[in-house]
Image (cartoon, rainbow, N blue to C red):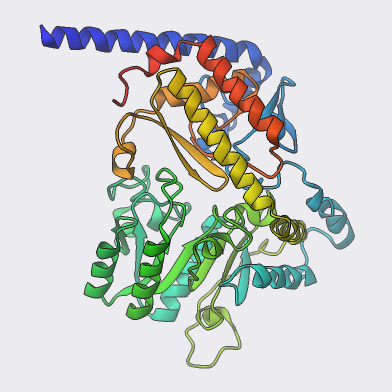
Length: 465
């Protein structure tokens, strides 16, 4: 009898989810017919009709035509408040005035010349604002920056092993595509086990575990971490943990790398190392560095980065780092303009204003869910947020296994109301300096409208309890 009741409840629950999905999908299809057409066209030439797996979501992806400030417009002419920010780079919003010189610079000097003076100016700007930036090397992406930083650490120490933490993502190099969940499982197919052998894993925010690991081994070249623990759910680091890791790596002669591809400039002008007051040996940057243009960087200790210096002393190990498009005029000009704008915003207190706005939004958002009897947890760090539907006490290990199907449906329903809070398959929310009080208010109104318009309460009921 008990088994039959449970089965009946499970069927009813799935019926509620399917009913909600059908209603949301139907409205989405009516709103985005041109996106549907482009999806059919794109699938003939691109896997999944997109240039990256994250960009796909059912029933078909959005295809955008333009953006301005915190707004973006799709090919059907629908406007959205954009809080996905292309997965984080658009801290200044779309088409910021600080980047207005990019096109002129390319027209004046060309898109790519050898050793442009712009790279010196940009490196000087990074040296000025990032605590660890004694020396700088430019690259094209965060993935490349991480690869180069780790190679630098291995060359400098003469050791092979790298320590990463569960829940952290460090780009698309095979050696880091594991441990995104609370296990060492590879993040997708096509990753040889041999490529993971030199990557050790440890639980995040656990001082005893990392101290024990480093005390027991003498073959570790570096420890790398994302101070926000963004991929694992935006749990963030504690200053005590980062300070302990800094001390443990220094004692063991191990290079400490902060992967600030996400936190760089978002947690303040000097990134997470300024926010937490802990300075690593090396730092990787991308995303907000050039406010949407393609640019990455490795910055850090001049001594450690001497392995990249052709004029270093004869006894210095030589590590190779280069790339054809590492110092493109457009990207460097964008970075120079963006850094100058971040400096202005920091000097005028705008970072704190944005963080206060996001905190107030967070409180109001949770109140709306509570009024609808929907248990929804929010993780927030400065201008970033993620949502988790659960009545369980929050933890990375528990939330990593949540069923996010209805949360994804909620994000799609918000798109129907003109709010791109996150891509449905992402759960990454990034607010920008372009978001004002009116935008935050409109988003909250859209959330209320969605919960009234669609049967989300029964769809959420009983899931992840």
